[in-house]
Image (tube, rainbow, N blue to C red; front, top):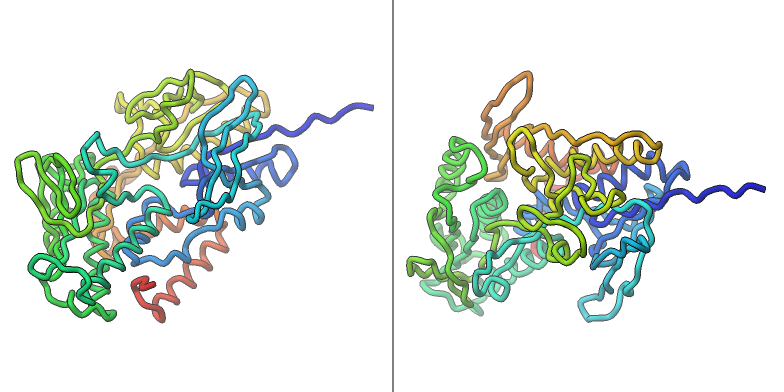
Length: 438
């Protein structure tokens, strides 16, 4: 009697844009047919599309658009494990997970280890404070769904205290400061201006005055969106100023104190709420992995095949991977577009590995960039072989921006569910408040 071999165990760590997309694809291709055991690991119980975190944080997008990882895993026939990634035992092929506790410090998931045959690390990125004093203690971040929820709650409470008089502010004003004018900082600033307007129309009467809420963006570089073409940067800055957002470029932050931001040139800004969005780097755990080589932004160095330099059975993709970009003679940037393309590629790559076929190098196609700067506006560039590079803005750019979110939801929910969710979401916006007020 012959013994049937067990299906290979594929463990994906991280349920962000890349990880959830890949888990969905592999479960459909292999998991449902018993050709592999797919396990997705994350320290959160839900998924939010990271480029939309600023909308969740401002309260202009409801948390009902979260995707439950427990429900998604059940519907797509893969296993979900709640846990915080802490390390790898390559000799025993084990992924180590730290215990996860609830807000009352009661255990939700114990410390444990999961066996794997193929491991994919897709643990994303975290804010980079560049060693600036006071950031950890006095700034909000916007890297995870949990941080988006916390920022939304803090914002609501701040406006409530301002309305009731519980918050004593200078000149009876609210001052909101965002440090960093990359895509996250710029989009959050515009979304906060939209949120302030919605607060004024939903019972927070004190912010009806045009000068009641100051929103400022501080950027150390000479211009906003330094990674994008200069013409887009100039258009975005113009739109921000039209939204009455103060933009300060060449403003290097020296330290953050409770209620204030201090620049290197001695300038001091009062701030009731400060958000740090000045840059990203790989999570600290990446640098603690024994035997692995790190590159730019502390990310795991990978070959063009997305295999890590240390181990052929361990891949990395998305924001945590330092993947070569031969066309630019540099590394690929930490962007959702990269993560999505790598997830699609990894489905084929793992299929080739399981079939014993040669692996192929990843090739990135840059389709341009889009930045949302108001409820109905955006600015960006689209790139393609047929159209070259074109700059778009306004209504058309905003529709293109929203289509990216729809395409992501389609990849993880399926066409029917994503379409139905979009239709229901559009209809519900007509009957519910445009701002989350609880």
